Length: 114
Image (cartoon, rainbow, N blue to C red; front, side):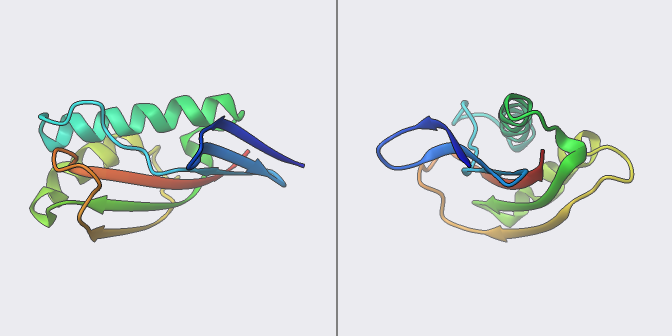
């Protein structure tokens, strides 16, 4: 069975299938904020979606992080490392990418177990 959450014409925010949670790219609310604030906002969105699926950040299998500017890598990592539970870090990739809105500094996609 496939469950889709917050389905729109272009994407679903989350899809659950066979005990795996797939999130769409999560972006910040505050386009003018610094990287730490934007990262915290994105991680809060991830927490909320995972909770709806019966999961949490200890069950993340993989994370893909997109940064508009690699100069933000240390600032994003500082927030990320305080959020990921010790010993529960997922497989992860971080790349520089042009994001859909100029004010977004970070976008994060995760896959997790239920």
